[in-house]
Length: 310
Image (cartoon, rainbow, N blue to C red):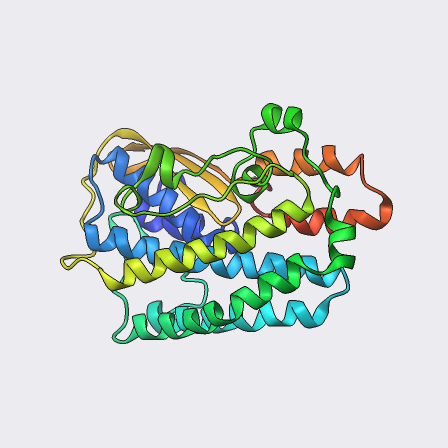
């Protein structure tokens, strides 16, 4: 990234962790915008939020499916996979890429939502919302699944305090941390939404929290798509010499990017994925699991390898 403009380097941020491409792109863009003392236009901020909530739902569905496969419940996992695939196809129709790669850039977004792109997203969302209550009941009411998940990979309050995990991992262990709320970023301060928090700290709590967050993100998406502001989607960034910090709440947790610009070019940078804190946490809780339960514990975290490989 060093020696490149933020716009040219943005493609590297988007490829740091494939399950959080939009969130990493947004954190990187906000770091560049903070250095340039420039905010993305309101329409661009709203479109970024649409992409972020689609990404959150898609990754939560993938993580739930991965856990269910590890528990031997492939038919139930397939139901999650079908809805994830529908969302990815809708994302391609709305933004030109299934993972919305390179759609968020410093200064705004690379392109506006496609004509009828909102309809494609809402159609996929409606199908998911129709089945979500039955999916929640099937997951939370499956006796053999609960027997294996309750108490597995449990994060104690002391561990949660020591390693300060964010995202699903932290919120399932009683930490009410969500960067959309604190410190916040546009357009979330103007939106009403709940941040589910559970105290169990185990694989069961992480499953339940993902299911609850899918419902919250679905409601946020409907609100955002119903009231997209007009106006431009991109502003140029001046060639400044300054530092900037950007953040985003990704599907796996808090993402932080720092940039130092000299004459508009990147002189130094640091990109932090949630996996930096979550991998040591998984190692710590694995000591209390049986060998047979290790796959369930790992899948309930479902951490990024590339995100920590810096």
